[in-house]
Length: 337
Ligand code: MRU
Image 1 (cartoon, protein in one colour):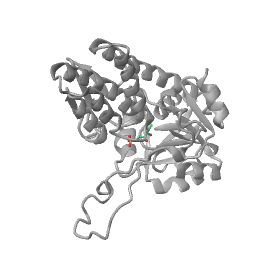
Image 2 (cartoon, protein in one colour):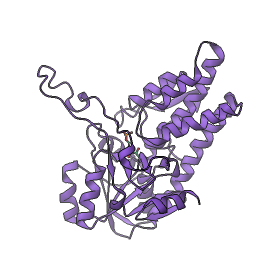
Image 3 (cartoon, protein in one colour):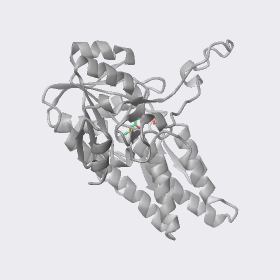
Image 4 (cartoon, protein in one colour):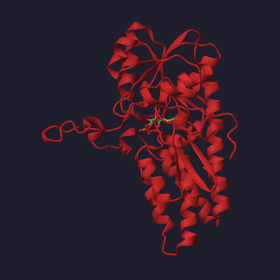
């Protein structure tokens, strides 16, 4: 599929799915090729591709591969493979949402062509949504603003253009932003390795900060914290990369505004509050890096998402518009637009 000029981390080429290996960035730009649905589930679990919309779109293409495997091998259980894909990561709702959309295509009698068309539709729609959110979010930012973002919510985390980083990109191009700060985001360093790389590639200067600098940064002068989301619950609670909730608390204390940017594919009307969301916990070695293999008393607690209560969110931007101080009624009304 042609993606006009937008950088995308996902492409369908010569009947295979290709994903840029985000674990290797920024040092190496390497595209991995997939022809097997379980290999796509593995790529999602291992963070070759990450970010809520990007894993949903990758899974949608993965369903095409699974359908082909099922045609070749009568013993191949496509529904079970789709479930493994949906279970590859538990927190981002986009993953289950995308697999459900492909299940609906199958239920309607669709085959390879229809599944591929649906995956391409989701991919294109996500880029369009990101561009729309970029404009809507940028309009909220006063000229001369200093903004902080967390993790990576850029082109790499989406079909292309980005959610939070899309807003920053649009606002930068409109001359509204004086300075961008990116949290390094331990332990995978998505801010350092991915966000800073994307910003620099787009010609935007960025200061990378350690998470512990957030309080000092806010005291030195900051206008917005701008983040993406893995899931926005029916009451407006936001589940995003670990550390987001702490930023929101700090931001409210210091009078810094908190903007969450997420397409409606990330809104989960079926889940009442953040307390109901499964929070992914990853291997402690991602933090320890083998340093304590000889000392089993040293372990690590590694939840990779947290819940920001809706009351701490100043604005939620979706492709449909802007919700100020989101709550249950406003989210429900927004979803029915
Ligand atoms: O663990 P990751 O890198 O998949 O976490 C990603 C995030 O938390 C992003 O902020 C979120 O998915 C929004 S992406 C547009």
